[in-house]
Each structure stands twice: as structure tokens, then as C-alpha cells.
Image 1 (cartoon, helix red, strand yellow):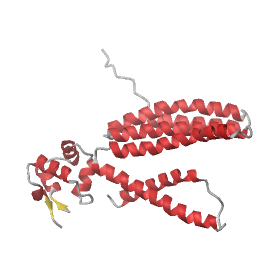
Image 2 (cartoon, chains in turn cyan, yellow):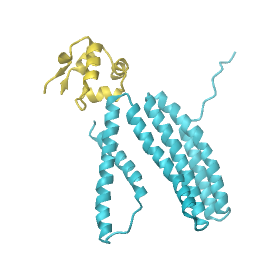
Image 3 (cartoon, one colour):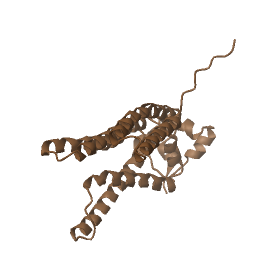
Image 4 (cartoon, chains in turn red, green):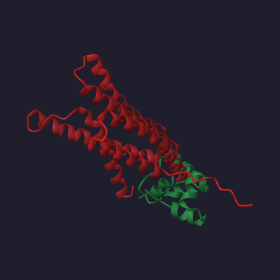
Length: 195
Length: 63
């Protein structure tokens, strides 16, 4: 009797590739005006469903490579917050472009991308609390401090240039992306020096 | 801080992963401690000493 093997599950690369292909196809169709902006956004929102198997398979792959439970939870929380952020930002921009809104609706649509961003910060805080491996926690803490240093340095530098009208105004939500870039640089720096 | 982790591990024919599993830490942690790039906390140093059945000062040495 032939040996039965379990069907091979698709890896994260397949799902991320499918997601990237969908995004490129929708963007292309919109650029060439085969579909209107609203249809593009609906298709884009539907394509986010592909991220669920992508995140699940990435989690499985990481577990196979011995990634700890705290990092798995962090990745899952960041992925959920990122999807909500993209959705929230898209909806907020689409509503805002439809016309002038009152202060209360404006506040509500501003919260759509703001709350997932707070979720990302919360996910980082939870990781630092939940990580039981002191060395990995030390590395993450150092990286987040490097990110914070970059935010403070760039913010002060740019702020004074802005005060004296040398540079244009920059929205303050940039602090989180700059912090994340700083954290990434911090992790790379630690990797390069072998720490 | 210097340490004798690599020698002690070799004497027992343990890989970094073996030691990491005994200590319930990541392999990166063992590597960082072994190469002197990270000094463990006192609780982890006691766990390392327990795993090897030795005193802390017989494993970790002053610079």
C-alpha cells in the first residue's frame, strides 16, 4: 500500500508573493483606469484576507526555527495592527477627500489610523514585558532606546530648523516610523558588532 | 567578564543549542555569553552554575 503523506502546506513566501501580486495587479488596473478608485480600494481591502494565511504560515515557520512565544505574539500583534492601520488610513483618507467634515467626524476618522499605531507601540511594550530571554530583551531594549534617540535627535534638529523657517512643517505622526527605523538600525548595529 | 563556558560545554560534548535548552534560553544568548559580549544576570549565572554543577566563580572569571 503506498505511503500516505500529509499535503504540503504553502509557506509564507507563497502567501506574501500572492499578496504582492494582488497589490501590483490592482494598482496597475487602477493606473490604466480599467477600474475606478473605489473598486480598487474594495479589491485592496479584500486582498488583505491573504495576509491571514501569510501571517499564520510565517508563525509556523518561526516556531519550527525555535522563535520564542513572546516574539511570535509580538509578530502576530504587529501584523494585526499593521493591517488595521492600512485599512484605517485608507478609509480615513477616502472619507476626508469626499469633503469638509465637522470636528467630531474629523476626530473619529483621525482615530482610524491613530489607534492601530498605538497598538503597535503597545505590542512593543508587551514584548519587552513578556520576553523571558534576558539577552533578547536586552537587545530589544537597546534597539528601542536607539530608536528613541533618533526620534529625539531628528525631532529637535528639524524642530529648530522649522522654527526659523528653514524647512517645511513635518507631521508629528512621523515619530513612530522614525522610531521603527531607529530600532531597525539598532538591531543591525548589534548584529554587525556581534552582540 | 571572561568565562569557561566553551570549555565546559566541550567537555560534555554539548552544542550551544543543547546548553540553551538546558538553561531555557535562546542559542543566541549562549553564544553572546560564551563570547563575552553579554554578561548574564545573577539569576542566569546561578542557573548556568547549577547546570554544570559548579560554583559561579569557577565558571566566570574576573577580567
